[in-house]
Length: 244
Image (cartoon, rainbow, N blue to C red; front, side, top):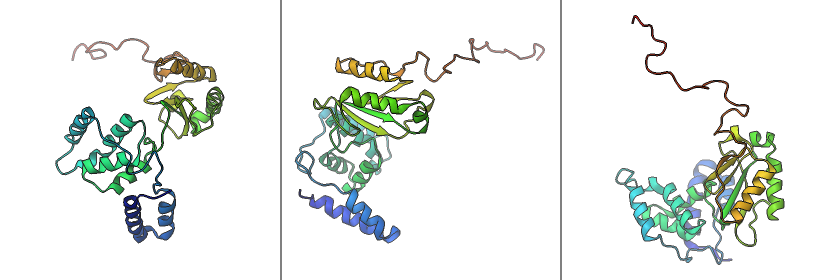
């Protein structure tokens, strides 16, 4: 398995910079665990070009930032590349670096830091199960086990038909609706094992299940119903003394 010379060189230079501040141990960690290794489906020669439509979107994204600060658009453009390709190969990262006129290593740093970027292929439906404390206390383990049993895969695995990938993740910010999962861009909340099985069946049938709580409550309202704000707000002047 050969290494990309450009990636190898950039990694070495970055490690030298880090050594100056954090020492050789951290540098070795970066070099050994975060460097890219070429594979047949993921190497600098893997074809990647943005579609004409996405090129226009990139121009619009860059225009949101002051002149001379194209690099500020790196996260949004990486996300666009991932949405187009389905995941984020190194050739896409290199293309982003070229467009934004920034060192390729800086793009790699962003792509390896944020878990929203998938640096290996994932299925059409990426199921991310939150198992952080609030979801765990609401029995997220049963949701995870139901998915594994339903799809016949382990965490990190993809179904043979490339339809589903299962990932265990940290907090997704919907603690009040625990347990929950994120599937692509949608949140499915207040889940039971039966709920997640039904959602998977709908996806297999080519349908898009309605996002949000499966318990019937609206958003994050109390599970037992509202105890305040139970009527429309009063009109202007409510509560003001008549003689004022």
